[in-house]
Amino acid sequence: MSPTIFREGPYRFYFFSREERRIHVHVASGDGEAKFWLSPEIELAEVHGLPEREITKLVTIIRNHEQQIRAAWVTHFGS
Image 1 (spheres, rainbow, N blue to C red):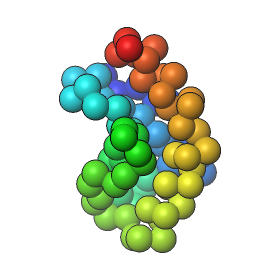
Image 2 (cartoon, helix red, strand yellow):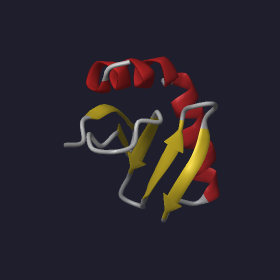
Image 3 (cartoon, helix red, strand yellow):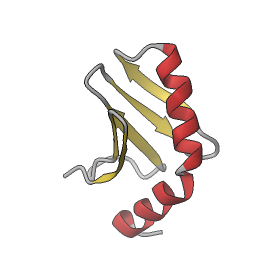
Image 4 (cartoon, one colour):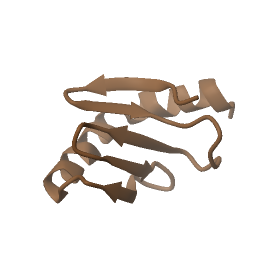
């Protein structure tokens, strides 16, 4: 199961239900996908097919939605 947290433009922000407990978010678009850690700070964990300029844009989007992502994480996984 991979619940969608939100969508913005061509990007889908989501997480997998059966993954590690360190808070993170996955992002997918038609061009590729990436995974970002949210703790201890927002940091790129892995990327496939997305250029650097998109990664920079995604970090900004994640910063703007960080509380929403964290709230969705707690709702889905618990504290």
